[in-house]
Image (tube, rainbow, N blue to C red; front, side, top):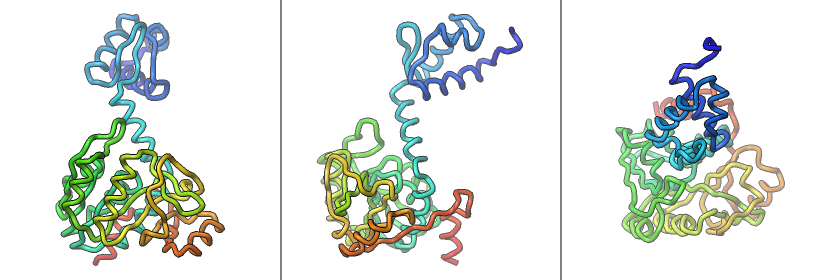
Length: 277
């Protein structure tokens, strides 16, 4: 029986995985699974709790709120990853050195931020803690993070402070994501506060580019914050339905279809470097 036992580190990794998959675990189940005593399992859960990875409850443990958030945000970043990379690649073509740009809190916008690391003399204004973290060590990019209230369960700044902070700035272009876009071309957010921040961003910039993969089209969310026909550019992936494409173009939407490529293809950061030579 002893030959099947895992090391303590391996056991902790597996418990983390179970918490991410199931949100909770029980001591008897873990003891049986790993062929160890319940006291050993309790010590494992104590270690995870000290690291803010788990919260112990009677008879077991639940995933810690911070850990749940990290896992959920990672999952959101990976969803439609190929489309997000393709859209970001097209968005990069709209940016020139020396510009002042605003990036909102969307995960597609975050993908765009990852492609800015080969730029120089760029100012990025953002309400996203994730975007700021992505770019904080980029030598050629100056990052301005607005103030605001951290939205629970998401690394975003919202509220009156965020809105007033944006009033200080004038930008060349704002890049915004969308939680949904209906068939009439209305843009939606799932959060009322973020919708208000997005409206304020558009007021601060000379032009606006909306980034959203094709799975967002034909859907609605809680708050409508604008119309595609009123923004300068809409970039989606090439899977957009032909009827949707024709409808939006007829509305006067400047729509760019991003070609999908395998994720192991040359990165768009590398592409940007070669294009600038």
